[in-house]
Every structure is written in C-alpha cells, then in structure tokens.
Amino acid sequence: MGVTTTGTQEAPAQEGRRRARSARLSSVYRLVASVALGSLVLAVVGAVTGPGWNPGPLEDGIEVATADTSIGGAPELETHDVRTVDVSVPLDGATVGARLSLPEDVAEPGPAVLFVHGAGTGRSVQAFQRQAQALAEAGVVAMVPDKRLDTYTTRHRDYVAMAADYRRSLDLLRDRPEVDPDQVVVYAESEGGWIAPVMAAEDPRIAGVVLVSSPVVPARQQAAFAVDAYLRNTGVPHAVFRAIPRAVGMSMPGGGFEYADFDVAPWQQRMTQPVLVVYGTADASMPVVQGALQIRSDVARAGNTDVTIRYYEGADHGIRVGGSPTPEFLRDLSGWVLGLPGTAGAAPQVAGAEPTQTYVAGPVPQPRWLRDGTALLVLVIGVPALMVLCGLAVAATRVVQRTSAARSRGGAARPPNRFAPGVAWRLAALGATTVATVAALVWYLLSVARLALDYERDAWVVQGGWLGVRLLGIGAVLVAVLLAHRAYDARQDGVPLAPGIVRRVAAVGVLGGSAVLLVVLAYWGVFQLNI
Image (cartoon, rainbow, N blue to C red; front, side, top):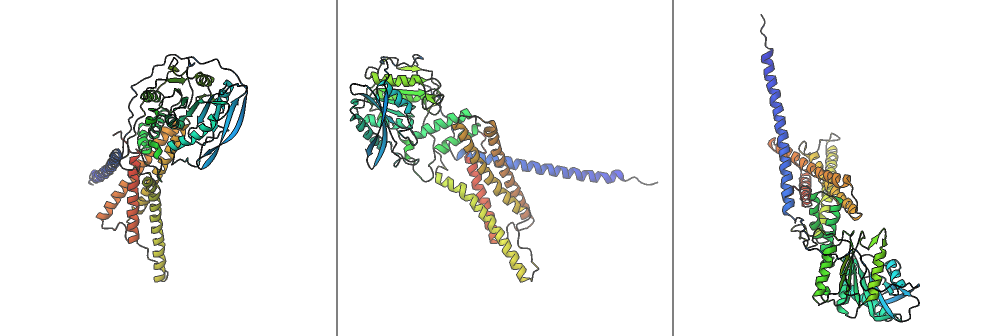
C-alpha cells in the first residue's frame, strides 16, 4: 500500500503562508504606527513653535435706544443746486487736487465738511461722491482732496504726517468765502479713523468729527479681528485659525508696516469736539460695538460727552446697501452737521439697528519662532530651489561618470555609482511631496482669503482643500518613513546609501530641506491635532 503524504506536505506550506501573512501585517502595522508617530511629533512641533488663536468674548454691550436713526434737533433739510470746483492744495513737497461741492443760493458763509480717505488711492473725482452731493444739496460745502500717494505705500504710512497734509486742505477750505471757518467738520472713513483724531486733537477749532466705520484699535488688532470674522463666515476648519496670529503677528518680508501698531487712543482722549460715530451692521471687518464704546470712553477722558452713535441695518463698510450709501445715513449726516452745536448731545445718543460683535478685537499673540517674514519667505522659496539643485547635481554627475567610463574603456561603460536600491526614488518622492504640500497650502490660504474677502462659502475649497493639504502632508510623512526603513535595511545589508560626495551632499540637502519644510507645514497647522 502507498503512504499518503499530502497532509504532511501541506502543513509546512500553510505554516509558511501564515507566517508570511503575519509578517506582512506586522510590516503594515509598523508602517502605520510610524506614520502616526511622525505626524504626532509634527503636531507637537507645530503647537510649541507658535501661538494659538482664541479671542475672548466681548462682554460689554451697547444699549440702542430706538431703531429710528434720525438725529434729534436736526433742522429740516433744504434742497440746493450744486456746482463743483476743482482746486489745488499745496503740501510740503507735493501738490494734490481737490474737488469742492458748493451749494448755490446760500446767502452767508456756512458749515463745511472735509473728507479724509480710507485705505486705497482715494481720488477726489471718485471718492465720497454721494456724500458730498447730499451735503451740498442740504447747504453744506463739501471738499474731497486727492489722497497724497508719494508718501503712502503698503509698507510705510505715517498717520501723524498724513494729518498734517489734510490740515493744508482744512486751511484752504476755511479760506473759502462760502465757508464759516469755525463750522468746518472733518469726515473720516475706515483708515481715516486713525487720522481725523490726530487732526482734532491738534486743532480744537474743528467743529466736529464724523467717524465712519472707524477701526479704533491698532491695525494689527483690527486685521486679526477681520480675518477671524471672515474665516468664521467662510466656515474654515478650526485648525486654519492658527494661521491668524502667525500671519498677522509676523514681521513682513522686507520690513516696514510699523503703522500696524499705531494707537489712536491717546489722540482720541484729547478730542473735545462733538463726534458722530457711524457703523453698518453688515460690516464684519470692524469691531462695531467695541469701537463705539472705546470712542465714547476715550473722549470722556477730555470731559467730552457729545458722542452720537448710529447703526444702519444691513449696511456694509461704506454704509452702503445695494452699492449706494443708505438714504437715512445721508439724511442724518447732513442733519447732524447743519444742526451743530445743537445736535452735538441731542437724544438719542445711540440709535439704529442692533449691532452684533461676538469677540474682542485685542492684542495679537506674537509668534515665538517663525516671526521673521523674510526668513519664512527664504525658506519657502529657497529650500525647494536647493532640492532641485541637488537633483540636477546628481543627474549631471551620473552623466559625467558614464561619459568618463565609456571613454576610459573604449565604449564598454561601467555603470556609475548609484544610491542604494530604492533610496533614490524615495528621496525624490520625499522632496516632491513636501514641496507639493507647501504649494497646496499656499494655494489654499490664497483661495480662502479670496472667499473670505468676497464673503462667500465654498465647501469644496474650504473643507475639501484643507483635507487635500493634510493628506499631502501625511503622504510626505509616509514617504519619509519608507525612506527611513529602506535606509535601515541598506545599512543592515552593508550597502552604501549614497556613494560619492555629490550623492551624499544631495541626500543631505533633500533630507534637510524636507525636514525644514515639514516643520514649516507643522507651524501653519497642517498636522494640527487641536493641541
């Protein structure tokens, strides 16, 4: 009889397959654990290298007396024909144009308003047209000067010097025969809210100040507040908010931007003129409650209680609804100016729509590490360039070695030295994924900024884009782990990882550059685990 050996032959084979399967699973587990550990380390690095973002709630509110914004004691508005006159204003070292809107058929010199621009170019033929027209029709002379631009750049702005320039326009306006020099009011919008208080503090003769959408707090604080509000409206993931203090708090590449910390409070505390404070409830960029409260508190330091506050329902930063200034605002502005000094303290002090401000616009935490914007820019641009050069150097060396070997052996070329098996493509993949993640992060932040400024939502960009950036980052960690495992195996086998000086330098360059970029990505929250 024959002896059956099938069972005894299959048992070792099954055991071998089981062990191979177990080894593969163990390898997968080690790989997953290594990637998770690497991501955790980077999350910790990101947490300790810079500040978090957790603005405090605004605890103080403002009581609105009535929804009717009408100015108490304002006179009945007349209607005048309007003519415009263009004039030149000599400044210290420059000349700017200005447009005067003059009411016709006014018997005596009367009140006037000088407009102070917000951020931007500010041309007299374009800015404040509706406001100037409404004032002139009501009998108030309006003057809109061009903004001086030769001393105004993105990097450098001097609000005290700008106030001195606007005082030249103020002097010219006071000298007009149609104007009572003691009835000139200064109207400032947005960034102009850091200029008009300087003018008012240094010239008590100014009859009143209108602060429209005034930031009040320093620009750095206002910018962080605005970005926070925009991002919340856009619906970005929580991790993205970490970028606020790290972007707003860092020094900009090339220097400048000292004006970001200009504090207007000391100037407001010297203002003795009546103040009309105006905000739109749809303006998410300004601390609409905090700003009004601070202005009222600041001027009270000078014994000034003549502060009138108005909120306009659904109005934006320019007090516009549907692209045009609201009729109620134009009416109230004209009435307040014409009624001075009687309208200075007229009731109600606070009126209009109920404003909403959830968080405080406060000091911005300063980054502890990558605060230097120039250094950060050099890293983001220079490191990828360095890695590209490393790759080109290896390619060039390989060509030279092949050519040299072919010549020395009469055409029988000996293969040049190479990286250890599997190391070259892993190095290339590591550099490529880290650079791709940085590029994706830059794209994502710019895309979110565009959506935020347009006050739009796009879940595919906001949520999907962030998921894509994070997956790319984890992919970079995965490639780094695979490279480390392969390098370990090569060492165990006694195989040189990167033979030759060029390959060693290139390997160090790619590894070091990738490590730097991974830290930068961690700093901006790509690996954040809410720690």
